[in-house]
Image (cartoon, one colour):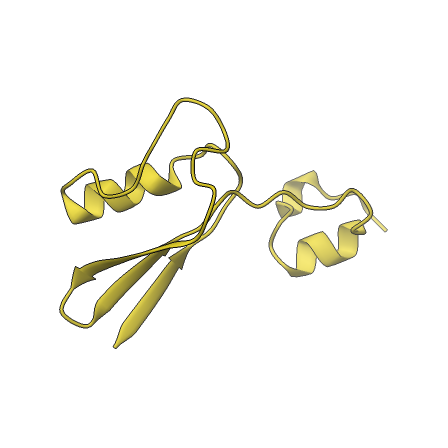
Length: 81
């Protein structure tokens, strides 16, 4: 069994990607952030499950080094230390 979580910033097309993979409108979408309010589990195929997650917004207090290490900040946006 394979489970894939689709995680990212708000309003970047996570639910649209899932709908494209499923070839149906299983996940609600919209033209504004915050349409997906809760985690949603959808079956793609026998043995493959997709988890649609609400957008992730980082706390302003998370330091740049931690953002880089968790791949939440592109390397080209980081300041030299």
